[in-house]
Length: 354
Image 1 (tube, one colour):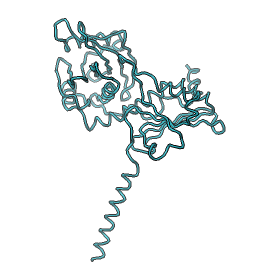
Image 2 (tube, helix red, strand yellow; image 1 turned 120 degrees about the vertical axis):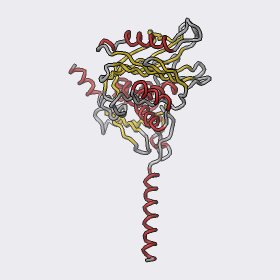
Image 3 (cartoon, one colour; image 1 turned 45 degrees about the horizontal axis):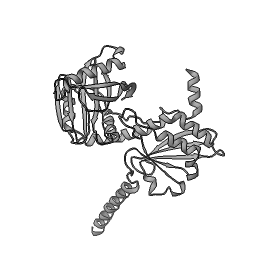
Image 4 (cartoon, one colour; image 1 turned 30 degrees about the horizontal axis):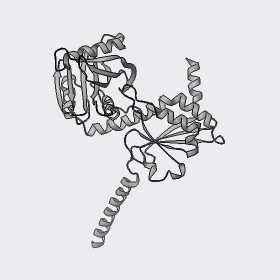
């Protein structure tokens, strides 16, 4: 009997140690959001191939009032890419070898060395072909890395988000929505709410509103921004009767996107307070609730005159993807590289088919 007890204890401890080992085999990825590490020799980094990749990654974020880079970029020699550096959150590995490769290809791996990690590998035969590939696919590379960061934020917001914003989205629009948890204050209106962090030096805001869907003509720049201006003028006034929020239409762009496998229209640009000195960036998604035949708009905007706005806006933009219309479930923003042409030859072939 005593031996059986000892054996049971031994098995329990062994199981516990085994589960602990599994949990700690892969560490959590290090680094801050939107940091990218490029694994490439110093010589290649200074060559045409490295300059091409750096130029692509070093672009400005659209829709901000001042230039702010898309990523913080670092580079490391392959021989220094060890167990300390390989747990970085976003890694691009460049492999150029004409003896092995006949064309440029790009693929990615999740959680290769660490949890919540993305490793993007680009293989090419020559520096010149690699450089051409970077310039041709630069926006896809940026979009892919950005969307992967958005996916991480969506997961974080599921566990830690603004309770008041979630409650208002449910009560007014029967939708699920997760905004950053620092947002506490709110204002309700007719088919409208506005929630805000009310910070002293940086204020992040979420608005949601709806209006009737009138067919495909609803989704164009003039119509969408006209609706925005009318809603904001009615619900976000200034300190004087002559003041209200408006859109800088010349600095605002709209484009179709896909959210949860459904059509949406993204608007990104600048807002300002009419007859006042306030202003800043905003981004919005307009989506159709086909059950109720209405357009639901969710928007994030920032007022932070003394701060850089990249991080603030990206947190708000990521939260827009958490909006679930009735009977809809949240899905990752991007799960594959289908949006990225795998080879330059594929892209040229696609153009020829159009």
